Length: 372
Image 1 (cartoon, rainbow, N blue to C red):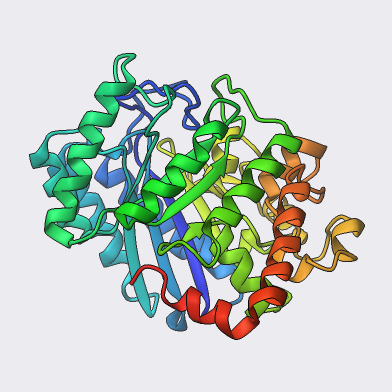
Image 2: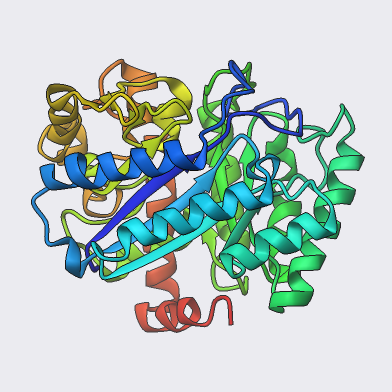
């Protein structure tokens, strides 16, 4: 895996939807980072944060993920100015700069086309085809109608629908098979995300229920589906074909401080979007020009400080100890073990069984054909 760095850029906290499990809690919905503030923040990150990480950035890829709130609430001209400023600042630093955006796509066709143009189709969205979790003015049907229309608008321009996240909570678990079928039928990639406490009240599914639900979803997907579904695709690929000790993707990595950064509208810096949503261990403010090296060093120490049970686990090479934010929620320590361990362990056992049944070569060929 080539060297990479991910910047989560949350330019706005406000949203035009009222979903029940919002992870971007609108404590201050009016907060928005101006293009000038964004430029100043990025220059601080470039000059003061990146040098702390010993790496040749000229050979690395930077991924900028624009998130909210809802990014479509930012005026189009202002958003373009911010996006182009980031490209200008980081193009000379990195070998490659790739940016994309996460949006609920609840907007007019004109705004959706503008967003698609700025990011050249690199758009992700969210789905809830049968539930009542994602709503606009309290209406799940209105949310679905607008977002479906927007996905079709993008599909006409790009000949594919944008990938989507499905948040799995206690209510949504029963709809998991439907969302899996829809993604495969319509040909868009899917990310399954167990709900977490990000500010608003949530209704989490129990760990045994998640184990059962994710196991059944994996069986529904593996060697059958035609699209990638995370975390299944990554865990299967990592377990069977890449057993490196460090180097993975969120949430299965332990070098988070070296490869990820979240910038909030007020300039506050976190390791990632999830830790920002939960208010976990901020380590500076780009607008104020502050950087807490001690706090950042503690986060960075997770590369070597992990739960002993993780270190001795046969699946550690692929899992890396799981998500730091989830571990902090569950144990109170960034070096702890996530309560989702049972879910990932159940999946790894299924992965090994699939390899034994079908053979690694056949599994590999099927993986290579996903999304084509």
